[in-house]
Image (cartoon, rainbow, N blue to C red; front, side, top):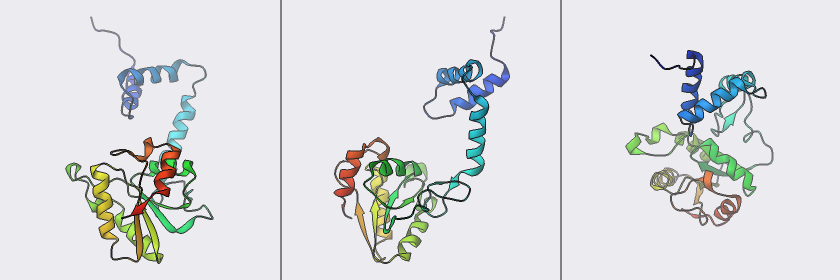
Length: 201
């Protein structure tokens, strides 16, 4: 005698939830059942928010951060210092820097980092866009804020070499960031010290 299973619709929902990072089979099942049974759950609101993000949120064509239908909250903010640009691996790296309040310049999100073993090459990243932006502003400072693991260091070295023939200064975040650590794990004080202590590269 076959064991009882959830209806196919519920199984499909669980399967989709399992694809999310950090969500295992049991967690996916609990979330699905919560959405279906809890009176306070609003699954249709969640579905509408997901649909809205999918159709309206894109990467900013200039900096690579998340942008709505027509605006980028970074590029459109007035008062930013356009003589300094912080290069990060992912758009999510912008948020901890912004929360620290220590930096008021521009950003450039690469969309990843060099990783030959994973077949991520320079042409797979937004390096060309970075070089164009730096060339547009004479004497710009470029802060390399890639992670301090092997791939992050390789990316920083590649960028420093690519920018070496342009009239700009290249610096690297310094003390405070643990070896092998990423920006998403750094607290505000750590980021503040890293920016204040950045060094020539």
